[in-house]
Length: 66
Image (cartoon, rainbow, N blue to C red; front, side, top):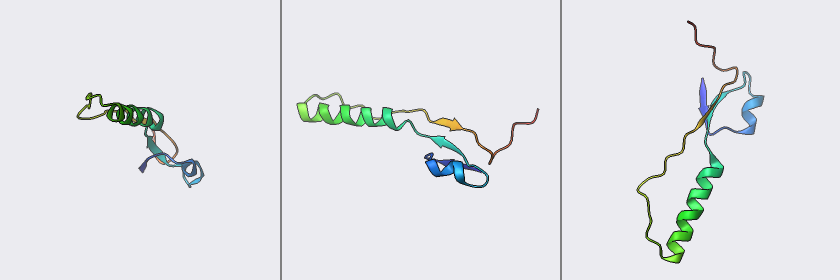
């Protein structure tokens, strides 16, 4: 079982939940930069932002068997 949007509570579930953690800081910086560009009249608006999530492996998954 794998969750999304890692939360501090995932360490306390039984078993601890493997999850995909989003890069909240990088996403926030991109959003603020876009807002500042709009406020200052700059027209550099990308069509999409891509941010790679981090896989946080906990006990709700097992190792790959080879």
